[in-house]
Length: 328
Image 1 (tube, one colour):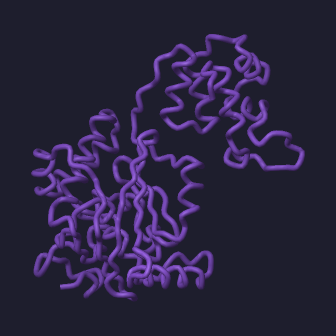
Image 2: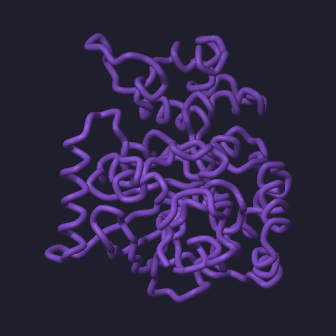
């Protein structure tokens, strides 16, 4: 897109958006793949005439409210939204809260990688999206309350997710993962200083976990890097996989993937998971025995194995729950 004027950006992004992603049915009568001008007008709450004038450059001073409505209607990621604000001669808004929207393009991308376990996390490490292979490896995240689908809360909190953790080993060492997650949360707080949910998450973890408080005080700029994780699977035994975290700066999301080298035992185990997944009904997202793997998996996403992630040991571990699920 060589023309970066407001009208050209508007036309280009309108043509790009799949009507189905905006809630409109595809039909043979469509002459172009994108949204019709009247559909954009409807979604943004504007007149068709005004949208036409914007695209033709005859309306040159749209308000911030109008540009925001258009950006939402076109499903623009934050970087694109900022670009269209600047093209309109306006200051780009500062994000006030952690984004939880997974753009359709990202959903299509990860859907094409359905043979691999994949999860998509927000900047505060909320699990937003996962595929069937993720469920086969770690259990169905919907078996946990939405608030417990947060990796940091699973690592340091005292809720349900904390006690669903399985033992896991990591090539990164004992504390690298926890330190990296805390450092990532500190960066998120810097980017979203007025997000009340993020502030409540951090305050709650500092009260619940002295260790979290210690890491918070000293965490630096640790990077979430690839690691070799061994997951204790209740049906397949130990499954050793490469875990990588792919950061998407434009939308501030993290894609967590698990892979295995071809011809290895781990690759065969993934094949068994795929076969098991395909053999199940479409609405069966995992056996009950696997559900408790979610938090463990959420710990692999980044870096450091920590046997403490399996929860307290010995007398400190609650009697309720699932005896034997957490190993020795």
